[in-house]
Length: 446
Length: 83
Image (tube, rainbow over the protein chains, first blue to last red):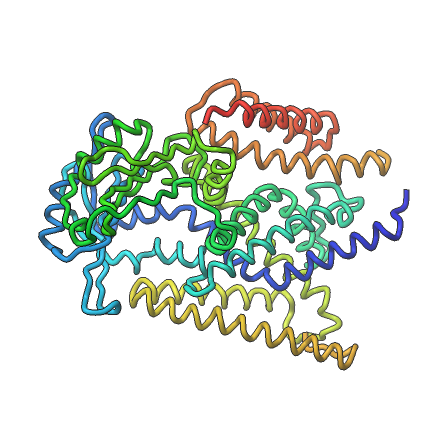
C-alpha cells in the first residue's frame, strides 16, 4: 500500500515542525536537560558539601523521637535579634541537618543581610553557617528553573518545555516514516550524518515517554506562576488566614518549635515536616509543610497550619484525601524531578536527561550536515557542534564560579545580559532573515 | 517477513513497547524504593521482561503480551490507588 499525497503532506508538515522547533529551541532544551540531569541530585550534592566543606554532622534521629530545635532557635535569636522571615528547613534523612534561613533587615533593601544557619536537630545546637544564595545547590536550581534570569527566565524555560512537547510528539509521529526498513535498534555507520541520525532516532524513541512527561511537567512548572495568575488557579495547600493582631505583636510571639513538632505528629501523624515558618503578618499562625513517605506528590505539598497562641490546628491539607484536580496538580513536580523513587530513580532520570541533551546535539549535527553543501561552511559540522557545546559549557561553568565565589547578584546580572542579549540577537536575526528571504527568494543569511 | 508485518512491529508495536517500558521501569524502581514487595512488583517485572524480549527479538506476541498486561496493571493500580 503506497502512502497517498495527503499522508506525505502531513508527514512533511510534522517533520518541518520537528525541524524548526528543534533547531530554534534545541540549545535551551539541551541546557535544561543537562542542568536537570545534575539538578536531580541537589539534596545529595548539598548534603555532601555540608559534610565535606562545613563539617556539619549529627547522629541519626531514632524513629519515635522528635527533632528538637528550641535551644538552637533561642541561640540564633540571641545572635541575630533583628532576624525576620525565618524559614526552618527540616532534613529528609534521619542523619540530616536542619537550616534556619532568615534576613536581618538593614536601612534599605540593598543592605538586608540573608543568613543560613546549620542546626543539629538531634542535639539541638547551631553547627555553623553559610551564604545560601551563593551555594552550588542554589546555582543548579536557579539555572534549571530560570536560566539564572530573574525577570522572565522561568517563562522562557516554560516555553522551551512547550517546544520540547512539540518535538517529542512530532518525533513520535514521524518515527515510522524515517525508519522505513531499518529495524530497532540498528545503528548504521555509513557516515557521520547517518550515524548521528540513527542515534537520534533510536535514543529519541527509547526515551520518548520520559521526555514527554519531563516536557509536559516542565512546561507547566515554568509557566505555572503566570498560568495560575491568569486563570485564577489555587494551589491545594493555599490557605489565607485572617489578620487578628498587629504585625509587630505577631512577630514578637515566642514560638516553641519542639511543641510544634508534637502538635504536628498528633494532628497529622504521617507528615514528615519539610519546612516551617511562623507568621509575621498579624495572622498569628505557624505553617508546617511536609511530605508523606511513599507518595508521588510534590515535596512538602501536605500542610498543617496551627495557631501561634493556642497551637490548635486551623487548616490541614492532606493530598491523599484531595480531589483528582489537586492530586494532578501535586504530581507534576514529583514526576519532573523524580524524587519519589530513591537514588535509583534519580540515576535513571539523570541518564535519560543526558540522553535528551544528546538529542539536541545529534539533531544539530544532522541539520548542519544536511545544509552543509548548500551553505559551504568552512568548519565541519562536528567541529561546529563541538565548539558550540564547549562554549555553552564554559558559560555555565563561569556563571557557576561567579555565583559561588563572588556572589549570586553578580552571576544573575551576567546571566541576564547573556540570556536577554542572545534572545535579542536571535529575534533581530530571525526578522532580518525573514525580510531578506522575502526580498530575494533565494538569498538567505542562515 | 512481509512489509506490513514489519511495519506493524517496527513502527507501531516497538515504539509503544518502549513507551510502556519507560513507565514500567520507573514504576518498578518506585516499588523497590518503597519496599513494596507485593504481587504488583512481580507483575511489573514480568511485564518488563516480556517487553524487553519482544523488543530485542522483534516478537509480536511478546510485545503485545507486555503492552497489554502492563496497560491493565497500571490502569488497575491507578484505579485502586490507596493514596
